[in-house]
Amino acid sequence: MDVRRLIKMVLASLDGELVDLTGARLDMDGIAPFHRAVYEATRTIPTGTTLTYGQVAAMAGAPRAARAVGHALGRNPFPLIVPCHRVLGAVGIGGFTADGGITTKRRLLALEGVTVQP
Image 1: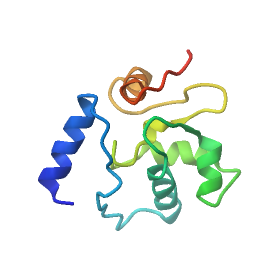
Image 2: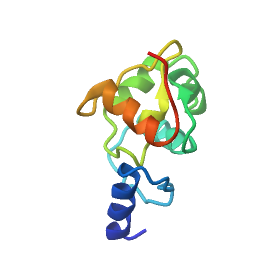
Image 3: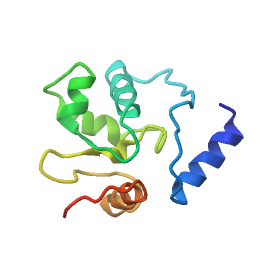
């Protein structure tokens, strides 16, 4: 996917349009293998759907590594393309390191039609 097209698609998603960013190629050179597995697993979460950190850990081949998934997603260099906002805690929304924190996470989820209880 061409970079200009990707930028337009990201902006459209921030305007509330449901777009599919899974076709974007990512340069994961220099990214640790576990983080790469977490990002690849997270990219499979469909728009409007959420998984828990534990579920992503299992998908990444490390079922007991929910906290490590949170750490990896906190360092996500590909926001929106690796939709870390779709990953929630087992008993709540979990964290979010982007500007605006959990408020931003809730907003991104709301754009996809997902409401998360406080």
